[in-house]
Length: 70
Image (tube, rainbow, N blue to C red):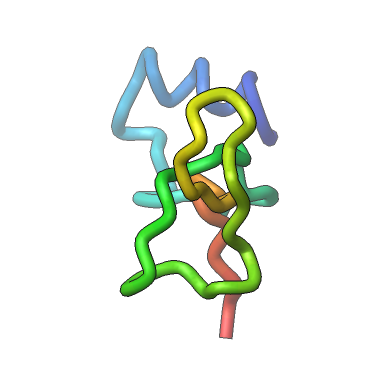
């Protein structure tokens, strides 16, 4: 059994859980423009925001990252 069926069974009876953690198949995040910080962001990513005139750069905000197995 996999997926939602197994998850539903484990939720009803926790003693059925053969695993104590899961491996994600994908990473989840969003692309956003952050205020440029020369100590953390590379110079080639900076640009001037047309709305407020601040220096910004595109960064990825990760909510959950996929783990690669060794």
